[in-house]
Length: 163
Image (cartoon, rainbow, N blue to C red; front, top):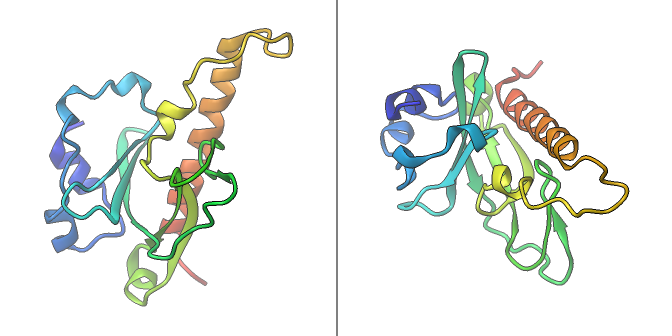
């Protein structure tokens, strides 16, 4: 994927937002085979993040914004994409304005996501060798399928027109 493909993939950003987007510093070294989606925080605007996912042969991307309000730091929080649990600052509420007219009217979609948007890495932590995990590769496959399905669903919600 090229930087231009990434910029053209954004479905919920204005021309100015897309032009000001800062690609991840390691963009050219990314290991695409281990990315179920590309997620990163903007180094110049840390409250912004980006999620890019392949939809067939075309990338589809969204801009997400971290909520300003603090989450409870006294309990575990779960990312709704990768289902990893974190304490402290590991999960944040992110919102994405809807694409098209709905987004122009201020409509958004939100969910709790790993604060670093690194869910592809989180699901690849070593699977415990317990009897109920007889095949670690099948466990990883199910995690990948679940993550891909939930990321596609979130992006689909952003793209879905309001009735």
